Image (cartoon, rainbow, N blue to C red; front, side, top):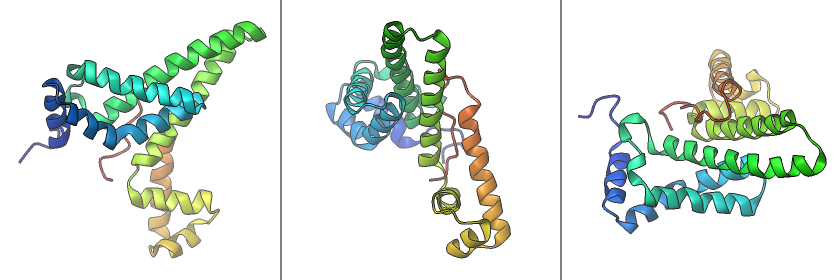
Amino acid sequence: MAGKDAPPRWDRGIQQRLARGEAAALGECYDRFAWLVHGLAHRVLGDEDAADGITREVFARIWENPGSYDPEQGPLRSWIATLTQELAVRRLRATETAALARSGGTPEDLERTVRHASVAARADYIVDWMPVPLRAALERAYFQRRDYRRTAADLGITDDEARRRLRLGLQLLSTAHDQDPSDPPPEPGAAR
């Protein structure tokens, strides 16, 4: 059996197949992660066409440079999310710099825009990959405006367990604010 820190078999296999130039491997990778790439890019850029462009660019880079992913460094999805965020932030900086130059904005305005978009994208990523019990508690408490007692009743758990899940979920979400915009999204947990 593989060690605890060993990359998932699928990640290692897809990387090897991409390195051999198997187009089907790129298709599998696209099928598995295109929604993630597009969603993160759209969250950063706020534009459907720009997100489509970033999605194409990410998968083109994966195809052209499959060796740039090292399975020993972490899951493929995290590497793809990092690549997506880097490309989307770069595009956001370029488009916002041009817009700021026309409107007389400041570099601080640009950094604020980039930071806001990056935090929002990381928060979405964290919620998407958060363990289901934590996500379910957060959805009930914050999106459905339930208190922890009602959340506990809805989920069939104790009040203490509901508070624990909400606390852990919020702790994970708080990490979205703790990073530089150029840093990769955090790993919210292996459970999914």
